[in-house]
View 1 (cartoon, rainbow, N blue to C red):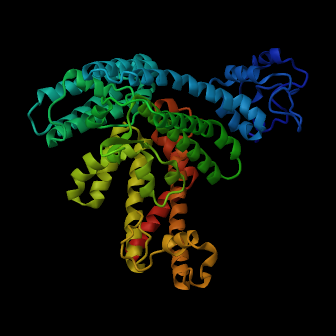
View 2: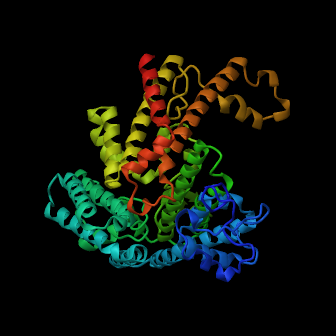
View 3: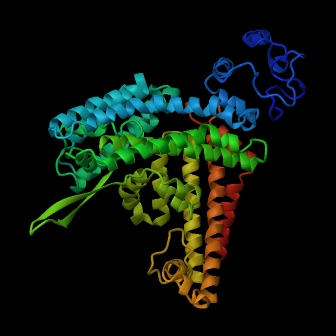
Length: 557
């Protein structure tokens, strides 16, 4: 395709006739196939817009949907359409329709969550029942006819936990049951397109059942929940459709009566705005700002960026549903002096749930930081129930088993397994390499941020040398003694080293995320092995070669 024109190579014509009537344009397409689908009297003047001037944005949107289907924006971008729009066209043809679709999804979910939230003061039995009922309504609203696969999985888990009541192996049994159920459904029962839609919800449910089993074994949960308590937890509307995972004890905290507050409303409103902003960036702005024909690595970064922001959209959406239904609050009791001699107990409440932290992913210190902040609840689950269990086998086997467990939970998908296992190897290589360099130079260049008392000789004293002194007696400072030459060298060398590893992590993220392009025909069924290898081959497997080189360098030093 020639950039900017929607017609095959060799054509010097545009995609609509200059003298054609907008309403009769579809007639020109009848009978044309292959390379000659456009008549020779079609042309696009150099100064013309990418759509007819006498067609208003709404008509153009409907027309493009008829020609290219719902994914007409991807079709437009393959010819440079989005990047060639001006801001007004982008707003009317992409941003506004995207926000409308986003609000169409969000508003019913918010209404259901607020309905549950308004049940403050109701009995625990009533709230368990409403959690189950509203959760099932949410599942049907999002997944329609496929919701019963999720319900069947939940019932199977309850039967298993009750049949094994008193056993010390409920966590292991729940893990095996979840694995067998998910593989059976994916391979033999559910259509690929349907499974791809409900895979995320099934993964969240599997994490709930497995964690409940292990918590019962360890005594974190004292008694096996009743069917109503269990169903309220598994079907809880704040997490059932989009996550995130929460423990059974976290769910019980939701049942506490807590008055509605301004802080809760502001937190929910801001999360909704962040959710819509990420959706807009993923769908429109990433493809508008970054052209597709600059460089293959720029295109790879753009596609990976669009995918990451779609993940942030889901993350903020799950935050929004959690906060709206009462999850994600931290409490601590503080004593406040009252008038006279009496004291009263004041509850300090903070709504601080965070599913993802985009800043730490877009500008990461290391790949370890990316993994930690990609999905914080899932990271906690993997660390608690997989990594710590496998840690006696050694650091490397524990890391690989953790990423393997994550890959299995995501389903039999070569692309996800390849990405997650590659990320596991990359993270381990980066960790051991930076550990070795930190030991050699005694510098704060570890994959994780050093603690204030780390003991490294070359530790940048940013706060002590600059930050605090600039706030105190700014005009009276002895600027010659503000920071020594040696401290300045340390700050520069350590800062540049960490910056290089940050850029390396961004390079790996662009490479690993390139195959998640939304324009792929196989997206609805899950990406195949050939698709993944083709995408990586286009980038010469550069990231894997860099990882191999890093490991060789680590061994040499």
